[in-house]
Each structure stands twice: as C-alpha cells, then as structure tokens.
Image (cartoon, rainbow, N blue to C red; front, side):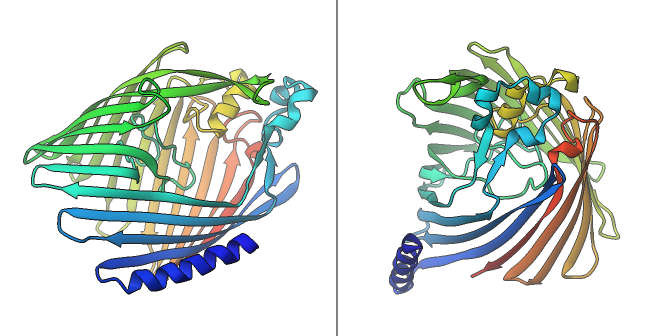
Length: 396
C-alpha cells in the first residue's frame, strides 16, 4: 500500500510538471477486469486493476519520444495450479515431489512497458528503447513473430514492449528494408532480424530472416541450482514470409515461418486467413493455423507440451487449428460477436460469445464467455475451465 501511495504521489507531481510543458501529451486508461473459470467443480476468480499512463513528446517533426507506465494489482485466486487443468493421465505421470512446481502465481507489477526515442528523415527512421515489435499479418497467430504470443480468446489485447534498436530504410515508394536488434548479454545471444517489405498490385508482402536465443524447458526435471525446471537454451533461426491484400472483395492474408533449431527438431508454422464485411455490417473472419511443433493426437500430449504452451515457449499444443469470428453491430454503441477455435487435430472446440458496449469515446465494456467442448485431455476440453471475462476501461 505504501508503494502504491508513493507511486500516486510521484505520478501526480509528474502530471503537473508534464502538463506545464508545451508539446507534451499525457493520456492513458484505468482498466478493471474479472476473470473466472470452473475448475474441479469450483468457480475460481481472478480480479485485476490496471492503471496505465502514456506520455508523448514531439519537439519537432523529426523527433518523437514515447513512454508507457503500468501499475497492475491482482486479487482473488492469485495462484493457479496447472495440474488442475490437465487429464488424470498427464497428472499421474508427474512425480508427487514435483507437483508444487506447477503453480502459476499472479503478483502485483509496476513496470515501464515502453520507453523509446524515434528519429525521422525522409528516407530513414531510427527507433531505440523499449518498443512494440509487431511482426506478421495473422489475426490470432503470427508464425514470424518470436517476440509475442497472443491469447486466442482475446487476440487483440495489447502486447508488451521489448528492448530493441530498429532501423527502417525506404528504398522506394512501396519498399522498405528493416533491421532489428534486441540486445542480450552477448552478441551471440542477442536477436537480429532483417526484413524486406514491399507491394505488388493489391498485395503487400515481406520476406524476413531472424535469429534469436530460444529457451525450451524440460518440465519433468528440476535444476538444483536454480530450483526451476532444466533449461535448454539454443539458437533459433527463422526464415519467413507474409502477405496481405484484397481478393474479390475479401481481405486475405498468409504467413509462413520455418524454424531451424540448434538442438530441437526443426518445425514450421503456417497461417492462412480471410475476412469480409457485408453490406448489412456483419463482419466475418476465418483463420487456419498449422504448427508442426504441436501434435496430432491428444493422447501424445505430455506435461512438457502443456507447460511449454502455457509459458509461451510454443504457440500451440495441437498441430492444426481454425479460428472463426462473426461480429454484428446492434446499435451505435453495442456489438455482439461469436468466436470459435476448433482443433482439427484432436476434435475439441471452444465457443466464445462476445459483448462490447461503448458508453462514449472515453469508456467501454467488453465481456466474453468461453465454453470448451472436447474429450478429456484435448486442448479445449472442459478440464481447461469453462468461464468468462468482464473488462471495463476508461480513458483519460
């Protein structure tokens, strides 16, 4: 509580100081959210408060500074045991002595989400600092993005910032060359990317090569030094391509990445999607995703597979999935939607009715219910927890 009061005093002083300076914009939002899920016949709840401050300063057309500060508190059930979400076959494979290590805690956080400086010339853009790295054209899944993993139930939620140096060089009207470097302890362990982005007719495309230090964990063995699961750091080299455009009135996109791993098996990811808005304002979207790191038979899912999925070391546990979304505005302020995620590999399905209500330009409410249907052990089985989320956000 003392930390919270100190932060509020600091922010109040900062706001007064910032607003006194010409050319500095300060804005942000407060978000209150409750998430619940039925696990083992008990409905568990996690309540979150988030306060975000955004600051922008543009002393000239060439120079831009931006920063985002977040303060997040968690309440209710703040420790979730991953084993509660898994089938008895998987749980029984875990030794009793290791079961305390599969608890996922939610702890209050105070952090600088983004803080970057960008410099613009007619043919060159340079950005340094903690910044958004958004790669790929997919709506739910992005095979070429090794920095972020989206929540399939809430894929449009904001992603965290990453420390990086980014250089964009304009080659001509539709072609840009991008170089990205994210520093780690050594040059060898740092991520490097080069991307060529261009366009032909109604389509934009990109070709990229990326290298990053990647860490898989063995979630069946504990490292006695770190008191955590044993890590397997290795080089991950990715060659990828993306495209997005319009075909017969439909928006279409595709994305592909092939991953060359230093010690693990190589794998590829593929996304193909399309969307369309009808004259009566109904919006539809469908996206297919394949990840050969996933498995085709849910009987083969192991505790390591599940933990790598929950910890975002891999984007999917099943090999082939399809995401579908239908959204219809009911009034100027209310939208109703229904999304579904179907695992072709194991036959399980998640249905997600969605409700959004905008009181005004400065406040909105979003809610969804997720209902999982599938066999025990499948990726969207009821063991994963039927439940929902309610989020209210006010902007300032």
